[in-house]
Image (cartoon, rainbow, N blue to C red):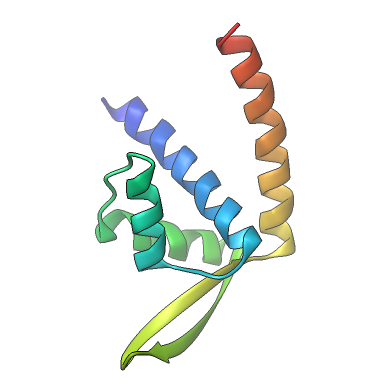
Length: 100
């Protein structure tokens, strides 16, 4: 169902912002983290999501070479941290209402 995909994509964005607020993240690590939580996300979904969050100003990236491979690392911006805090508030309200 399309609505489930949209909801899960929102969850994934919140998850990315959460980890990028704690420190730098790269795509490969985020795919592993999301998989650990039951999200089977492909690079074709994850990388456009990361790039979109960066274009919108929620993430900033830097590139460096690790073990001979070029990797892009993302960190939440102030705008990203504020969006995450707002999302946390809304998530708490929603969970309390839906799961009561």
